[in-house]
Length: 509
Image (tube, rainbow, N blue to C red; front, side, top):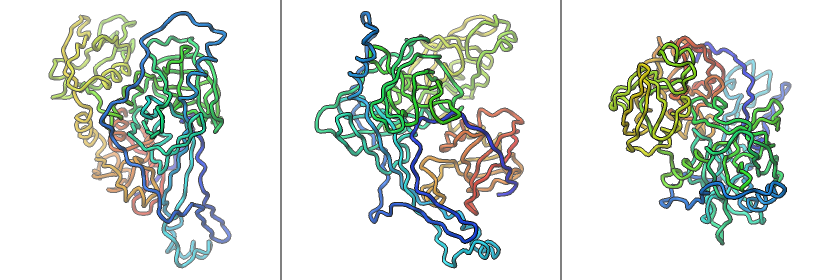
């Protein structure tokens, strides 16, 4: 790969996970020394496989608000009722990483200056450890947490509030929402949380967070809902609809519950915005409505099957509203493109239509529409209300499958940027020391296209685009499809020839 251009970008959106305690590799300039302080297990550690469970979890969902609250004891009761259902998660990940000096093995200058040995090892083993939080969902031991806590783990151990410790297996993970479900086999039925309705939470309502910040077990903090429907916090191709809170959450709180004063889970703590890496009053939780949908899908199918409308959408801005001849205060999602043969196309929805309702849900912006479609059952017929030429019209749409969208979008992305992606193989991940699901490999590249002109070659691996992590083909397609024409992007890539990583500037067409 050629024409590598360095690029730096300060990251302020930080997943709330405990900083990984990694073994260290040290390079000395005067004389070459590289040690990998890794645990060398003779039997190795078999990677945990995603396992689907045929029976859906019997998750307890609250019916609604009940009676007055005693505010002097409310937080005490929330803590007493829910601490037994909040667990401490310890993860171990074993990796083999490429020797960073290997590309210079045959370079006489480097061999002499750094004293490189004749028989230089090609790989080193290392062991990473991390901490997080989870919540028991049912008596069968299903535990809801974040994908960034358990994704790629070789071993997972769960510590209950009573001190009992269990090994856990992964039921399923969903990087698009940063959620995961694991399961333990306990001797007795486990205490579990009750889920509330995140849609009914109002800005200013008191909430309680429970977790294990920086390894401090059973920590309870309180605050309020600072805002709702926060988007653009993480990967723009992911499904975001965060609750914002000022309840103190820190690294280690990931996957822990955010509860209302009735002790009902309304969110899953996931992200903080911080320049220091610690609590600064801005935290984000995944709403319980989205979390429950994802968890039930993972438990039933081992993966998430999302609905698809077959359109690209954008927020209805005052400028777009004026162009459409409607009030600038109108809320909705503007249809930017309708995919031929997709569900919306078959139903009669057209470009520039403004969606104001999907089923019984009022649509205020593009994110709301995307999330509502995603959690709709595939094949379900839904009434969609739109504004066309300032007049309301209603269409019946049969919700499609998101997997069909990937095929269509991949073709569109291939034509737009001159690149076709594939999944990174397990052999490539091991060779380059990549985490599972990390990156998307180049399957085909047009030499005259944007990526080809920037020096990309087949088998190079794309790790990030504009500081957004790429986790497979779906992630790559999703991120690229949001890019604007003639936009400069910084791509973190791995050169398949040398194994080196670097930033490359690419200009979209």
